[in-house]
Length: 298
Image 1 (tube, rainbow, N blue to C red):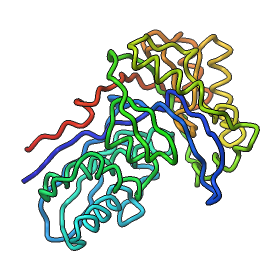
Image 2: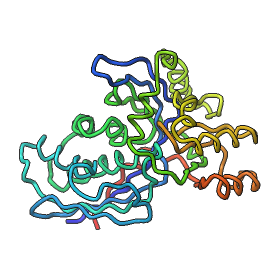
Image 3: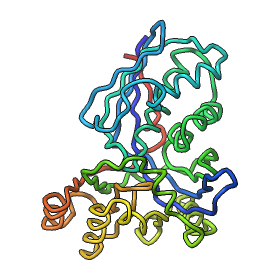
Image 4: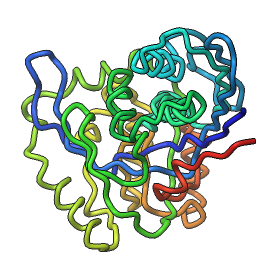
């Protein structure tokens, strides 16, 4: 049996940090959203766990072993099933830029959990898969649920929100590679950045009521810190804002996004971003839960 799944990128439409825990991690309040920018995952029967990777976005992708979240997810699921020697061949086709805040590793892990749950005939619920995923990475539980959701705690508490209309937007990807990016970005956040999560919860309630999404609804605690860590990305965000374009970090950056469709971007701005700052503009759409979690046998 061969099963094929998509692994959609994610955005944080809103991301606030409410404080730092005694263990050093941070509590978040976030609205996350799946996109139609996707990796592809195939899982098939094998005697041992195997991983192969191809695609056009391979820079920075761990190629083997537990450093790759898809492989780590397979190991965690086998252990949760009480049979750590379960085998499978996992094929990743990478199209999500790595290290940009788009959740590429987490969404691959989530797709592997869904696929192996079927391949191994485990019958785990979505909630059980989210619990396994939380041991692999903080964004994995959302990526298991997918669609649109209010995410709190370390990322392990996921409350599904209704799917809205499929909306066009633009993701901007700087051509940079930042070592240990997530740890460095969170290390920059201090008490002055903490909030009570009110703005994120207001956005979640608006989505529940089916209200249209506007740039004024969005917030990201990392917006003010991107430039200090990745100066070209921060300058590119400032250039967009000077041109009247509202942009926000993708997760902890340095990728960023706008609700403006890519075909509506001012041509001069798009050229300047690419030629002067090495920033690609990728047109995307939001993706509903059923599409994001689809699985087919091939």
